[in-house]
Length: 336
Length: 131
Image (spheres, rainbow over the protein chains, first blue to last red):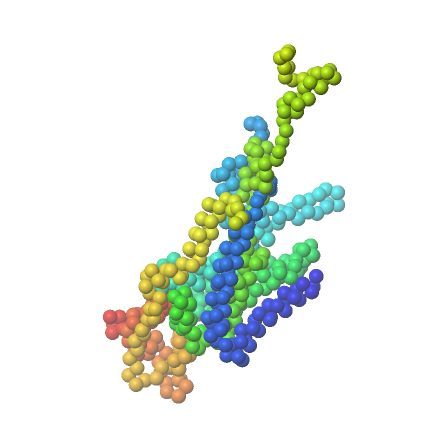
């Protein structure tokens, strides 16, 4: 299991070395500032469309909602409207709560045996907390970066910057989300190492996804707090990218290129990895279907017309013989 | 051609996401501002800046923070430049002597980058820099 961790670390280090060597030694500024981001963006777009369409073209043979509530049946049995939805609104609410509040993560439980042989279930909220802090921090960080891509800067982006640097610690001010995201990621990472059971089910890609995002945030923090770059130049560069008039930034250090390369890699890697759960959550059949498998018949789209023979047809053929053998028939034919 | 299940919903969602995600590409085109590069005005008056331009571009906030701490916490007001000349550590008194027009220098670049430093919540802007 340790080798999985080692693979993830080695590959992350390799990814950091690529721009360091490419820009620092080989002077491939143009490749790393223009070619790599465009390529990554294209891979992301096509990969995303490909993945979503491949899900959309997969037939769903059964109704398989996974619910944690009472299904609607008899009037006097109380059913759960959101936990076991039987209407479209119920499904919508269930999906909404899942996507916005990660509700299923709240269900994590610790199971222990008490000395008196009781089975003890304790609710665990740490995974939910770490995960929700990480995701929302990352969202804020991503939205903050829009200042580099929009001219004029939309007011909500400026507002986000002000809110995020509320504490005004140091100058340039430390962003709250930078710290929160990093702490949450470290928690998620160490959870996969320190909890034996979780380590057992963790693959190299699980570690790698976390390490990649940690390195993205760390390299971003380096660029902001330690190896500062000329933002004026950076914005010219980012606006150049989005207006298809590529401009190679003049004087930015390799830390900037490391950040740019890791972000590009993250985008290109996104559609083909576990990270695509961002899109997949919308199309999970265990979540987006109503729990009405008994109420309504669900037709398997694979079904093809089967040649059937009804009893009536069968009886029509053998009626004479049946009567002779004394077997009761349903349809009496008129005496001829 | 494979059959797409729930095509209307899925493709609407996909198109909406792609439209939002590629917004930088069309936003700047719609507003026609993608090639806007702010022009920053400086009146040098034959003087050199406190530090070299490349340093000031990236680290002016660090220098200002250092100045603030020196003045407010240690009571020192004199800063020795690299060439040995001594200047007063003062935003309004020293910086704005050359960068006379705050709006066309500080604000223009900060606005371009979506920054709103809170220097001016305490500091007065001298009249000639206000304009």
